Length: 301
Image (cartoon, rainbow, N blue to C red; front, side, top):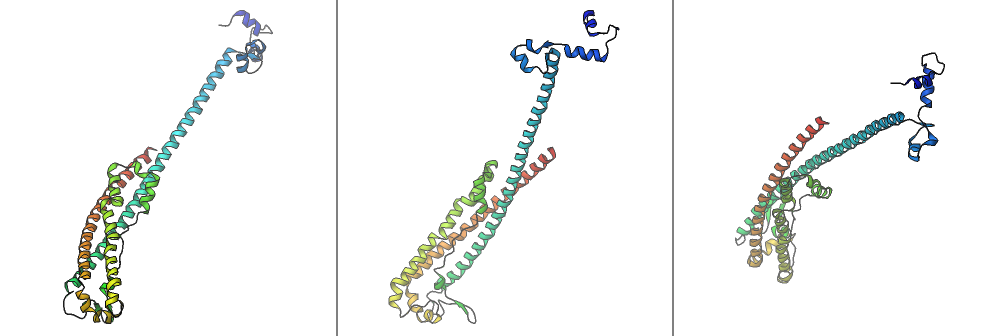
C-alpha cells in the first residue's frame, strides 16, 4: 500500500490525482543513484539509478531468454544427432545392398568355375581312359571338320579362382560391420575370408602350378631330346609321336594326380556355394530388418 508521504511526493501539483506524466517522472527518479552503488551493482545497472524491481524484471527476462536459447541449441543438437544417425542408417543399408549384389556376382562366378571344372574333368578323364588304346587320334580332340584341339597342349593352362571383393574391402575400411550383428559379420567373413575360399584359391593356383611345372619340365628335359621336333600346334606331331607319349608313364601319372585335384576342387566349389547362399540369405534378412527400422524412424521424425 502506498504511503501518504509517497503519494504527496508523486502528486507534485497537489490536485489529488496522479497523472501519467507524474507517475513517469516518479519512476525515473525512483531507485538509488548509480554513483552511490558498489562496483557489482554499477556493472549490472542500466541508466543513472538502480531499482531492485527493475533488476528482478531484467533478471527474469534474461533467464527466459537464456532458456529459449539453451533449449533451441539443445533441440538443434538433438535433431542434428538424429539426422546423423539417420544418414548412418541409410548409408549402412546402401552398403548392405551393394554387398549382396557383390555376393550375387560371386555366386555366378563360382557356378561358372564349377561348370568349367566339370567339363575339364570329363574331357581329361576320357583322355586318361583312352591313353593306352591303339588310336592315332589319342591325343587330339576332334569336334568337327577342321575343328580340333590338343589336350596336352592345353594341359599347362591355369585359371586361378579370384572372386570379386571390392565392396567388401571398402566396407571393412568404413566400419559398417561394427554396426551389424555378429551373425552377419561371421557369415560375410566366411564368404570373403573363410577356409573354403582359401583352399579354392590355393588349389586353383599353387597346386595347379605343381602339375603344369612338372609337365613342362618333362618336355624340356626329355621330350626335346628324344623326339625329332616339338610342335604342339601340329596334328602330325601328336599322331606321329603318339606311341612315344603313350609310353611316358610319368606324364600319365601326372594327369592321374591332377584329375584327383580337380575332383577335390569341384567338391570345394559346391561347399563354397553353400557358404555364399547362407551369407546372401542372412544379408537379405538384415536388409529387411534395417529397412523396417528406417520406416519407423522416418515416421517418428
